[in-house]
Image (cartoon, rainbow, N blue to C red; front, side, top):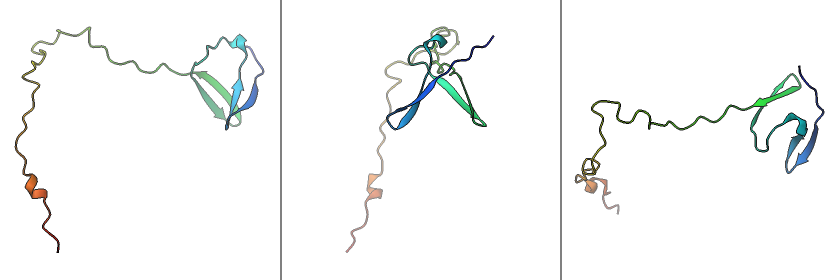
Length: 91
């Protein structure tokens, strides 16, 4: 069974805001999706933001995958031909 509530639009800075009744049970800071279709507005709770991947459950389950040692994390610093970037003297 659905309920119908009246709400009031008011100016908030350079925007307008919609004051919703406490009876809706929304918590402050809840994100919602607002949809406008042919002049009618509806809103619904936004999906939760995707969570970061937690790899702790699979650590050690992939054969051959081992942590790298500090030595393996070192990068070579080969000489580079920076002199090729020099421009000839313009006179």
